[in-house]
Image 1: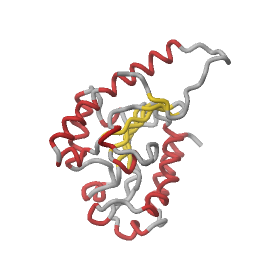
Image 2: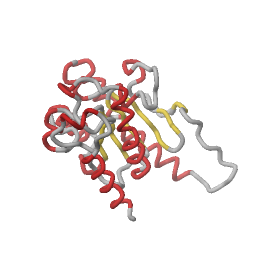
Image 3: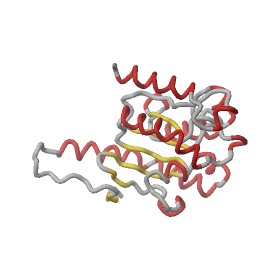
Length: 210
């Protein structure tokens, strides 16, 4: 089975999922979108009203802002993979509950294994918590860390940035770091030599990129 087929099968499973109470209120599930070859994966919180209707992530006002941010670094939606920690819309866009996060956790695990992004950008505190437990986004936003072979950088959620001009400015500044992180990773790959003595990065290692 090819990776493309496996991803489509996962998306079908999400569309049929009844693992938590969110299934009863959805119009459509929202598994995610983007190429398997994406170097960057964005992980948000959960679908909103527009996403629930269309079955695609980040297609409302927050999605428009995300696309504007991508354009600033010469990327678009077709270059990156976008998903959420929960795949169905919580009622009235409330915060996802722990049991809902747990029910969708396996889907996100499998997406990460299939796509293997070099850089994960978490949008908001719920996706951030997967890698940065008990941290405050106001303190660690824009600070990338390496977890094994993947770099993770927490950012403010675009929806929150739309409500707070100060956070919008910080989101724009943090987005501009993405090309620099990718360039740093490219440089590391170019310098790497196949040697058993080469040390592997420590999980949670803070990157000295900036």
